[in-house]
Amino acid sequence: MSEETTLHFFCGKMAAGKSTLAKKLAEENNAILLVEDEWLSQLFPGEIATISDYIKYVPRLKKVIFSHVISLLSHDVSVVMDFPANTVDQRQWFRSLYETANVAHTLHYLDASNKVCNQQLRERSRGKPEGSAFTTDAEFEAITKYFQPPSENEGFNILIHKHEHV
Image 1: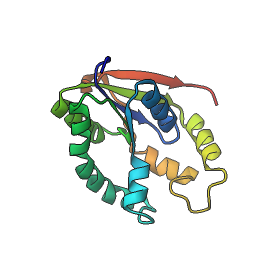
Image 2: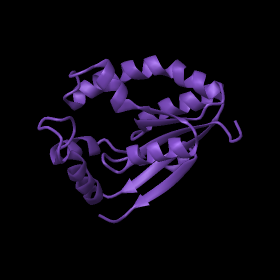
Image 3: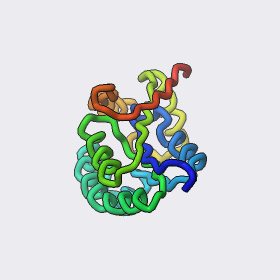
């Protein structure tokens, strides 16, 4: 591989644009894209309807894919992980991935206001059936209260993507 093998991961509020950026980076870097929502919906169809369901199933997924991601990175394949790194604890899991594989990393921080995210959430939710996971303003607020922006003292290579307009 001509470029340095890198693990790309994302921090940003719901509907900040993480998935859109993840797809773009995977294409630009000829990297493997792993999307948490796709894995969860295939492994646990119809079982994740609440935040507590999500909290229950995500550790199972992370346990299963850990060695897969390490294997890809160890074979010089860059990986873009569309999984949230929205809390200090979540970011530590990503640290364990790139440190175990001994590869470079970039934490992409999508810095967007609640107003921008709410507008994008409404646009994204249009046309989805009623009851689709995590599409309401109330769900946005419930999830956003856990959000912790990354800080320099965490020691990540942070690339900030500022989103200011609605």
